Length: 257
Ligand SMILES: Nc1ncnc2c1ncn2[C@@H]1O[C@H](COP(=O)(O)OP(=O)(O)OP(=O)(O)O)[C@@H](O)[C@H]1O
Image 1 (cartoon, rainbow, N blue to C red):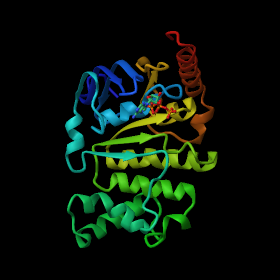
Image 2: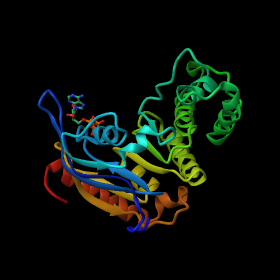
Image 3: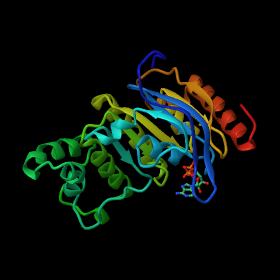
């Protein structure tokens, strides 16, 4: 992603202190460029979720400024995928995917085609009538991704969506997510603890410091846009993973990378 691509969202000097005195973020400077896949990597509790919540407009910063938050106020401006699929347990797959459209006032008959197309896109067509408990963890996550994408958001925020999945399922969802990003053209901000996942998926990795979180290091992932299993053994990929891992260890030690 070129450094001159326009920023979709940018945080300047952002701080977040909670009422209980916890200072989660301090001096966060981060610009999310249109079209990029940004991975946010950092130690547990460093404020990654807080950054996503601020971008989504679910919370307000206590210091600094965020530009582009208005995306959150527009229908289809952004989609949010959490670590748990957070599906409505009593509603079938199609009804779960319909939810954001229903909240936006779209009639069901006008949504059916979009829901079906979205289920095809995430590879779970044929399961429209299934209830969440009848699906595997990977399939439930596919439903959550379909629900986040059904409004065709410009920005997709993902908070450790694959952390609870086994490795094979995770790798498959990594590849499918890259395909979805390519097909929908959305911008992605993806939180993960895994340096390997961060580098495999992204065009840029931002490494956060331990709490109070700030951006310690940004690593451009200059790998071919097309990613597949062979990349996992590619020396250029492994070198970037080593670089990201060193930055993460420095973050854990509380010293700059
Ligand atoms: N609503 C809240 N009130 C008080 N403290 C909070 C609140 N939300 C988050 N925190 C605290 O802020 C810090 C950052 O939390 P956050 O969830 O953003 O971190 P994270 O990097 O996403 O963590 P993890 O990697 O473990 O998911 C943590 O210490 C957390 O306990």
